[in-house]
Image (spheres, rainbow, N blue to C red):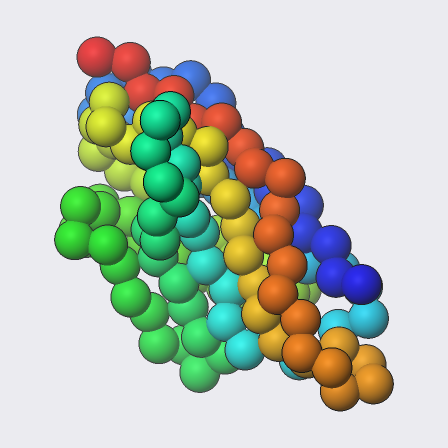
Length: 120
């Protein structure tokens, strides 16, 4: 019922920057939080950062000071600005959203994932 479309991944050299976007659409009544997870080859998916409807944010220790999450509530869109990228940031980045759809059922949705590759 809720679709997430990500964009902005790619290949970048260490020290470079990328900006990811994730737009939610569908029968959305409200979004409680949106976030970004990543999964490196052979690893479990891990939370990178999230932002609530009230604007509260949290970050994984590994990205603090380098990554910034922001949102445009009017567009149901979340952004991830990634600076000072490191090879260990490589992975598939997934957008996540949770909230309430029209009809007042809860939802949790995932994007299809976008590849981020940081070369050394």
